[in-house]
Length: 491
Image (cartoon, rainbow, N blue to C red; front, side, top):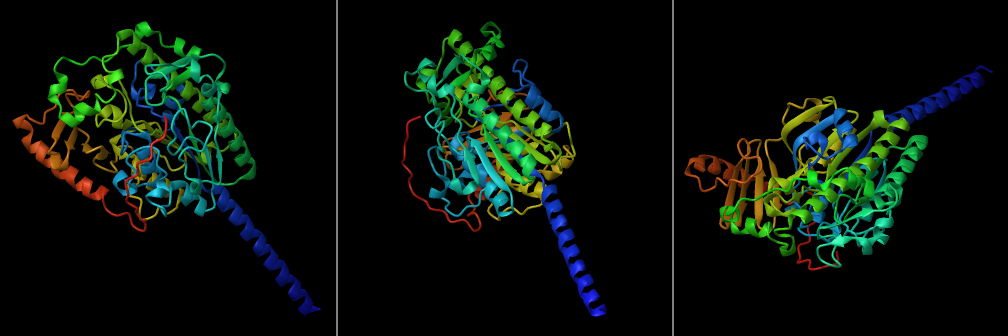
């Protein structure tokens, strides 16, 4: 009898232990921070929280109030495909070997572990809504584009009336939209647009995660404000063209910059010297698309709060690179000026102690990987080349790095808190640029030939060469396949 009772007590104790261990496991899983990664396409820092006097971005501004806004965050390549391949792998473009669009990342780095893969490997459910890797816009809207299927448990490819309305879109070059200034003040509602549909899908997924308690990494990629700039017409009304200011370039400016820099701002001949009225319309459409995208982000963030997930969800908001809207006489991207390299970056949620603060120190997009790993208690792979920005998220006055590095074509650029230093060709054989942001935030006065800057140039050149070497280190554990990838697809 006593023996039987002892066995019963032992069994009961074992069951209790299993029960409490199970509860602990569930509790630990539920306490793991989720990640909501929000990215706009071709968005520069023309936002209210970045000090723009006209652009209305109330939802992004509100997110900045509960997170850390990085004043000086930079992409590693000012073009969609290379930039996205870079930050999603945490490697520099010379490491991913992706230097142009229309590339699948595993053509060049087949065994790389992407950010969502890291989360999948650790029990998270990884979801993609919209554009995260490269897509040709608008041709790929509604498809998987150049997505990486290994990154996700589930994907959604929204497609809205902006695709069906393509024949209504104004463009500088008939039949060309994605790589050309083009726009449409659309009929209909937000919910009919591709990004409106994406927001609704994201909201539905958040509600499911709230019920299932499944830790998640959800990436939502909006297409706007990428060309064509399409938004419901009410957003255009917020920006009367008579209130739009078109950047002016002084006579003789192009003679002050190296030939490769000059070529970068004169790439698209049809977009050079736009008539004033056309330039105003393009800027109006870009601003309208930003405010439209902001509204969709607002719906997603409101749903996050309503679901009860906000307190345990890290939110990252960014773009894939910067953008020119007439500065330096150029429109769109693909330069090494501040306009094309500077990106918005806001991080909020658990682990972000410096709420509402602004970080002035430089940050790079390759920093996303180690930062998210640190915030969630995971370990980034050895191939991740960035630095964790967690110290800055705890105290915005702390600098996690002292410079930011960007490359394009045969040029490399270094941005320090005060200067931008750019070399074209090997060690600047094709030209050098130096800009002092204390006196020239617009980067219109190249000081590279000024004898008074010789010492500064020598110091920055040494820093840049060290960064180039670092960006070319073979990523640990990653196979690189080098070949000339000549694929071209319609935009």
